[in-house]
Length: 200
Image (tube, rainbow, N blue to C red; front, side, top):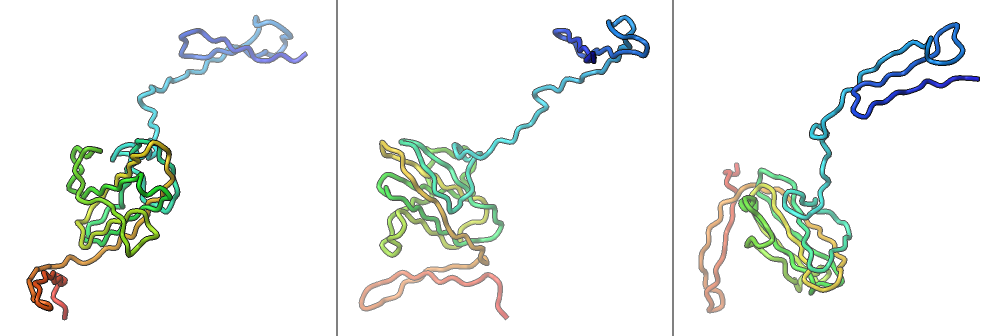
């Protein structure tokens, strides 16, 4: 009959002892040879678990992607753009069958300190007649470089499916100046923008 190693464990032991059958012995632990192996405990604090983005705060904001999601009644979900050091054109939109239930708030890279659901956004998404396929849209030209945040909120009493997507493109910094011009008897305010670098 084959004998299995016997493992002896103490309640708070830091080592494991086992006896294995020695030569010329057929039973018992009297002729068994003991070996000891040290177990080094790992403190729980030393185990690092990466927190997956959940979108419940700016610190856990989700990447903006062409993905359908569901948002619970009264819930908020944070999104962020990738970081950029250059000026950019930003266009964000929400697609949803329940457009009146959702709100889209936009926050600039300057608003990272203490950013929350009660912070005043620099912009809000709205319905655009020129793009009726989207429930809400928001656009900015020559936006400040850095990480922009978007907050999607559901103000209805039912879950809502939605998709947040957008276009972000880097551009050269530009110098802009405004001026008034009369057009058909009305004063119109124009903004003229040119690259900061001197074209050759």
